[in-house]
Image 1 (cartoon, rainbow, N blue to C red):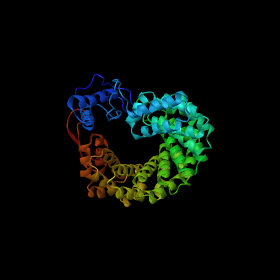
Image 2 (image 1 turned 30 degrees about the vertical axis):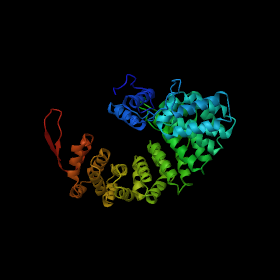
Image 3 (image 1 turned 120 degrees about the horizontal axis):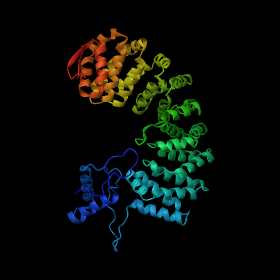
Image 4 (image 1 turned 135 degrees about the vertical axis):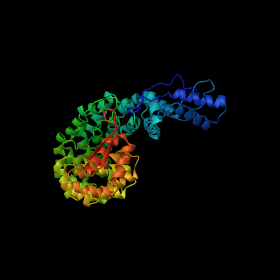
Length: 483
């Protein structure tokens, strides 16, 4: 089956730019051809079409991989089920038949949640204006609007480009007017979050529209609702992302400053944590958001002053068996340690031993090894006293064990090399003990395996006092450099 002429770089959700894609109709025609021309059964026909297109480098993530119902007796093509559901919703909106809306909204939402391909097909066939019209029709009916927002959220997941200015204003207005309603607040924030993931312009538009005080306000107003607090914290974090590949420079840093300086974001998040000491999902989300807000020295210090560091250290100690939480806490500790004074506070709080324990206990988890080594690396930077604490606590050995466990993970290798270098750069007495742990071979292997490790590995070897073979000097000659 040759690659169809219909193959092109079709519009897709952000992050999929540049890959070969086909229209749903092209895929459906290929499946039908397999059934009629090659007498395959439907499941085999779909499987074969998938294999053929993927072998030609086509991205099928947006394609519904199912057999379309056969043509009717008059030869008219039938539609995939989600488009039939969309037609039914469209008729209910056009009439308008409010009695039919709940059932049709619920059906479309359920199918959108099944997979991206379903909601992409719906989005390409005019689902957004239909759902937006349903939201407008439901404006005076709280329960119906709740259902309409749930459907809108499901549709926007992975395709934020669908939302327009009118949709943004509708969401902002609802969050302002219904701020005391926890369920409506949650539904609106979910829509905002999906609309802002991988979409810089939507983020900027929402921030200009006043979303930040609405999000922090929701956390304060509904501080007893785990769902609202977790989702609002997540939405705040999304506002600090720089994940839209279509935009060279975003406003992530500016948004983080606005959350802290104009909306007292650090205090709001840390205070919220006190109500959920046993809810790991909420605490992990709050940690992750604090990490994204640690963009200035004074912000890092404020987190400590507000009790955020104690909260993180306690969480790490209590949740050592939960890898997702451990990873988020390590990332947050790494972020706030950017402030030199905070480094000392972290070490004084006993966090180094917990970080080493986390690496050792989750040695098979590359993300925890990376974040753990990175946190120790930042704590050791320009701080010989901290280096002594890390060495005594087994930090160097844990980092080398992580290197041994994950030879193909470049991020683990880099962070471990940087930690070793920071430990010995101002404390040369540690070089021999670290070399006796087998550091030279592991660092040399990392350098050989990963080009991205070359600089940090060479620096680590040099500061350990090892002979360093240069890859290639600018003259093209081979050489060596000894400490």
